[in-house]
Image (tube, rainbow, N blue to C red; front, side, top):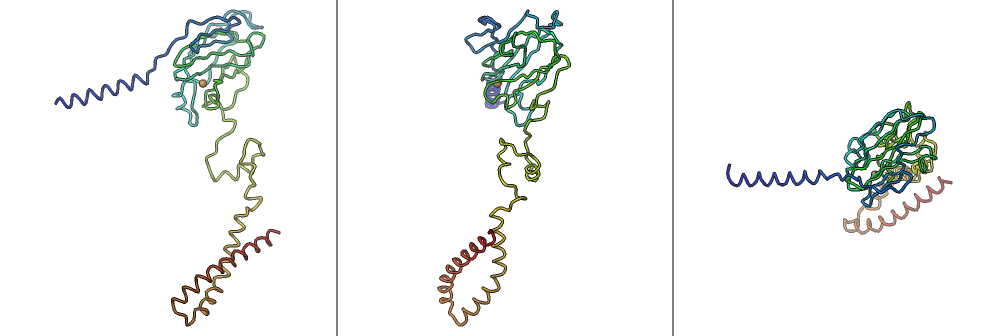
Length: 291
Ligand SMILES: [Cu+2]
């Protein structure tokens, strides 16, 4: 190989390896957390655990049924699996037995803040019924809680503005669970389904009950009330059909014996007055029809 070929190959290698290094951002593990009491731990680098509970048994649990660990990854790249989303967890559902002591290792692979926030826990044990892991990424944080005895499905989401709406949502099922949540990517139907089919818009508008949050319903549907544009259009076509033969014979008579120059001058002035008359006629006709 020539020196030049070597140079090209070496440059290509450098470019590829630096791009790879940029993709593989280092995950910082947040281990040195300050304990603020009541299960609230945090550090000064964007790591936080709320609702940590390693030993208090929820009512109905005589003992810890089992120790379990899950690793949850959060990041923009996991949204690729779900069209229309921007953020996601690597999984959308986790299942544990009642009275499990669960340790969650939460890895945020993005350069922004993400959370793994659980709702609906008994409030006498967990402040606001929440267990909450948060890390400004890229980083890893771990926390532990003990789940109640009841079969129940708990909402898990990231509470940073718009992250849940854009896909970062899941559910933790204890035992047999109880119900499910809408709009969990790949798992449950969206609460408000997207409709990209223009032919279905009319049907959807007439069948769906009016909802304040759907502005499309506020417009009158074409079937129940013809729009003013349609009315004007029909009058225009009718005028054109009736007026054309009349105008043609009229012009033939007027232009008899005139030179071409005279025709142009006459036509220009006639054109304007005809146009004005047509507009007046159409307007009055439309008004009378509308009454
Ligand atoms: Cu987030």
